Structures are given as structure tokens and as C-alpha cells.
Image (cartoon, rainbow, N blue to C red):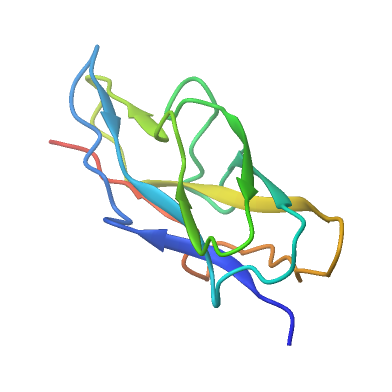
Length: 131
């Protein structure tokens, strides 16, 4: 059975902090089982602006980034580095959201089924404002 790829969060709601702070949070990419076979698998992850009334904006509310993560045979998880970060400011505002998206999954010897998470699922990051 092919492995499924998804996210694992140490915390899904980092506190924004005040300017000029950057608040990192740990995110791992995880397979539901160790990668089988002899060939590596590569997944790509990117940040995207959230949806709805209180969406976070790239490079204003969070650091826009993309990652390439390679799983070797036997691997089951990898940590995003550098870690995703929320950008602090001195504005009283509602909690804002941005997304992490898994895309462009590449496997040479077997298939891994990518999952693109939506804000209603576990990839949504809520930036909690300090008031």
C-alpha cells in the first residue's frame, strides 16, 4: 500500500509577538509508514496566504517560504528547515491564518499520494495576536 504524506505540528497556533520579532514553529512532514523500495521520494511544501476574512499576508504576517524534502528508503519523517515563522507587529488585530501546502510529490519507484490541506484541516496556522 502506498505511503500517505501529511503534517505533524508541535503547535498549530504560534503567538505573533511584537515587532520586530519572528516566531518560529516546528513542523514535520510525515509518512504514515516508512518509505519502502530503493528509490528516494521528494515532496515540496510551500506557505500560502490563508482564506477568509482574517487571512495572513506573505512577508507581512508570516515568512513566505518553500521547501524540498527528500525521504530516503526507510525514512518516515523530516522537519522543515528553516522553520516556518510568524512576523510580529504592534497592531491590535484578529487572529490570522496561513496555509502549508504539500505539492509536486515525486517518487521514482513507487507512488506516494499527496494531500493538499485546506484551512479547515490541520495545515492551517493561526497567528495569534498579542494585545
